Length: 134
Image 1 (cartoon, rainbow, N blue to C red):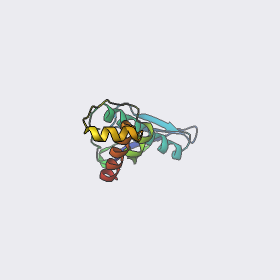
Image 2 (cartoon, one colour):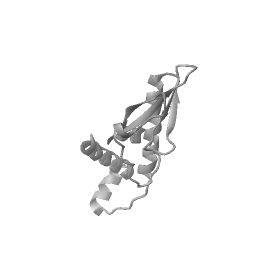
Image 3 (cartoon, rainbow, N blue to C red):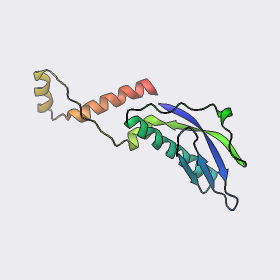
């Protein structure tokens, strides 16, 4: 799943550093020593914010139209592109327990092959998720 959010960038008057604020994600603020680093740090902060929502079963906020965002004086607006599938695969920590039923002959087969059910289901669901969201 890819998402875009407008972000406000503010250059520090005394250095090349920038602060980044994502208005649609309350409290999502980051920054970097350069514009390039600020963009990357903004993407990381916004992705972490959205991942927390997703892991809590919530829908991330809808992004505002870029033209509706008005930065404070001296700032500018740009879009941040979030690749939530990749970010979640790398940093997702929350797990859930699911119970399921399978035929006995498949359980016997899986045990004889030393198949880890959790790993198998995760691989299968990850592949299905990639197919639907990439």
